[in-house]
Length: 264
Image 1 (tube, rainbow, N blue to C red):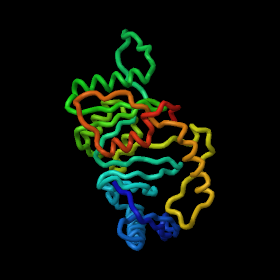
Image 2: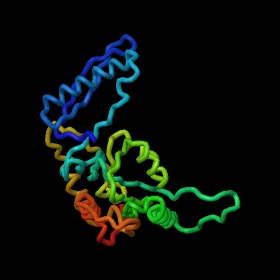
Image 3: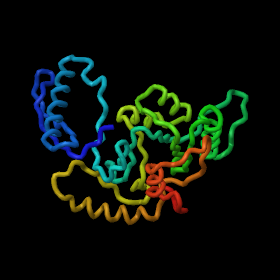
Image 4: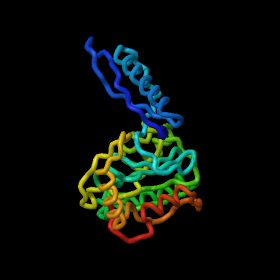
């Protein structure tokens, strides 16, 4: 998981089809801005090598998460602010599943399941949690779209093939699964999406060179409106009786699982 305290952008010249082009390259560091600048230049050099035909320059590349760090929870978890202003939990080894729809089952002559899609998702998670994956604990939450599931009792590598296989079995959103692999972490939004609160959008730029007054005004309104909504609602914990850790407790506190409000 590449989340950095310091960021820098460097304008670099590269050759594309024998013509000189100027590109912006971002670099991050937890040491200094100077190191961030150096990493930005290194990235531009790798881009030039790839353009020149070097095939495996970015084979082991892990995408940086260029977002403002709001809180460092521990060595493996942090809260950042994403591009549309919401707070996001990033964690390297606590598996979080994002499930938008139930898994397709049955065949030509199987009776159609007429239950609400969310109820089907909850049952699917419950069945897997009490059979194949009964050694783990599964905390299921209702979200606006479907369900979020936090897996307790294990340490999972989001870039591992077995992890992907497990995520697929739970019918995790494919795009989310791909991003987990690309970024080397699991992510969970902690505060509402602005448009679901009928708020005007705001593109959050980071890093910011100066104080963004318009953003500060927007953020004050966003945080005020957010108090009237929940991101998720706790449904149940199934599987093994695993205790929750500080990361999960903070997740539950910020998302507002203990309040009965509209999901956003």
